[in-house]
Image (cartoon, rainbow over all chains, first blue to last red; front, side):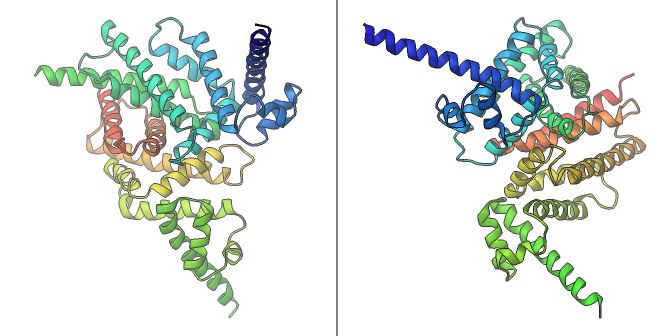
Length: 205
Length: 193
């Protein structure tokens, strides 16, 4: 019993420490991101050595995935808790302008993972894209029910268009901060809505 | 006489880049690629790097050489949207170059990166080319007047970039079909009142 308590106690402490590290990581990275020099900065912020920090994460890859996941959870709480439709997704992208380092980390790391078929984080990104696609398919259906988008539109197709545009726009924005990611996504959404009504008309004639 | 060594260096650089394009197309930009490039042009790896200031410069020049070749093959002299689709279709044949482009462009997005200026220049060049494509499509009537050209261009570039990432994750992704859908969307709004 004492054994168990102690075990659970240190486990809980580990979990707490981990989430404290992730909070610090989100802060550090949102200011200045990218993969380089990152681990050292995070460790310094939480008063650990790099080795001490890596005691809480099995690897650099586990740390990066945990950071991206913590960011996603945070964004979901802020912007997408209620079924707000596509506006929730666009709000997340708009918020990204406040956290360039996280955008940088995501862009670099997702590219690194995509480029290496044997990368340990491939499953993480596969699941993340699948979940995002599902969420966006839900947004498309909301728009179809409200009549904002035509009924003939293929929801998974529209979801994919939004995802690739958001990924591509983030890289453009990192290079040139004048790029209006959210504005461009709204324009894309309107174009996809317009095309869906053309499709509806095509199906009816 | 004086031009001799410079011209020779420039010729060697061209040779390296054309070999590098072939090697990277298949293998990407791993350490092994540098070794193979050096071997095929009859240089040591140190000798190879004598022609380029850094690894970053070599890969930046590989991407530039790729752009020039793609432009000649698919885009010149009067680029159309079909030419852009043809470039993207060709990308599926050169996975290593796609990998290099996706990784290097993400990495180079920080201002301190040695290839940052190259990518800024490249996006400006690409936007310019695609603006021309849209204006010509308007002249010929394939696309309507009500189109925000700079938005359409940004979205085409973003989709092409985002699709390359998705395609690296899953080669079943049909990049050209997706881009055609986007183009249809742009055409649909362009006819809106």
